[in-house]
Image (cartoon, rainbow, N blue to C red; front, side, top):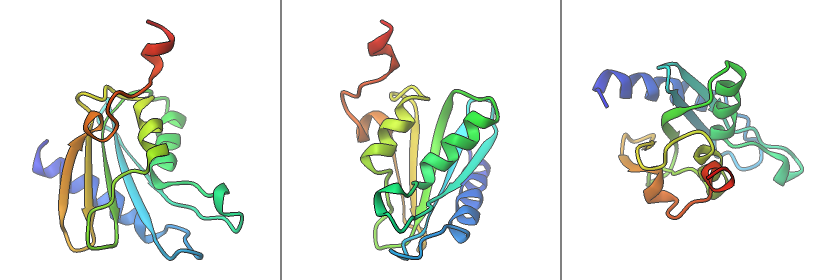
Length: 136
């Protein structure tokens, strides 16, 4: 992935992070999802007083992508605080799996200090279940 594209993804994720709604945990997360057509869709976490009813940043980005008519993504960048770069939670890994090829889909994680890591979705979600299991 080219540096300019990484920077654009990071800028979208940082902007989403800045407006995240996290009054309970104070743990804001921003995500930038790269659709197959090259467009980037941002998402932020949105907490709720009924804790399990909140939404993850990746879910918001997926919803924005689908709303725009896209169904395939090639990468996601997740941005948040902490000593270590954060990865998508297990549920979001499965959500992302629905819209990508896990062998080639890139997951980039960046913390506020600039520490970065990168994996394929298959590395983070090995032996995953996806649409191809339903329609072989």
